[in-house]
Image (tube, rainbow, N blue to C red; front, side):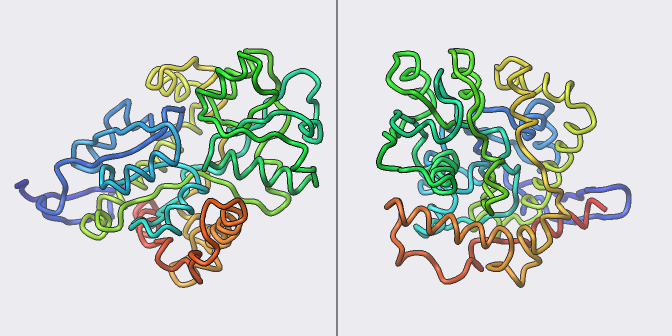
Length: 335
């Protein structure tokens, strides 16, 4: 057992007292292999210090893998896309959304070969996407918004690495994927055709979110709050000196600095205070009508439409899926 602990979370005045017995010896954080601001905390060990626990970093290839890890009780907190998170919640995984790590802008995009100059040019072409991902959601939304004939598009579900290999073999004409795989397609002769940010004007909010096991959050609420504070600190660090932050992240994930910079700049970062408003997670009383609640409904209906989940399984509200209390506490402690 650990002894007593005092957390100093912000400039001088906000203290959280806790017993060391309430702090886990290990916190399992799941992340994709791509560049993200959280890697700054991995590089300098600041997350371990803030949580007063050893952080075990668990890497996954896609959001579907993160769901598998949650189902087997192998992780505590994960950063992955809104689409697989929605699928997991509808399937009644005991998890909840605690924050938005980044809104997808140009981080995920459609890369096409020569002759594909606009989104309408993918009709008659072979287009790959990672299944059960925000990229799949964005691709399907782009098809709908631009009124394309879906029957004329050959859609191929491929994991990101498989997509790159298929591209190089000449098996596909385009791919909707995230960095660094998007850059690999570009380096192999591709160019950007469409970016997820373009869907925002059509009312689509597609984002990466932090998801936590409910049992873990209930047992260690101060750890969840501290985790979100570290996220904001690292966003601030990136915004203060993007070049330095990109270099650190690039080294951590084994990517070129230009790739890391492209990825980090391809996300938009709402602050903790912003996320505590109805436009995002809500204030704890208007969950289903919050921005994320509405996005969950839209995403769930899309997933039901493609057969990924059953329409009858979609809950009537998202009260148990979104927990804004941790981000509210984190926002207050950061003032």
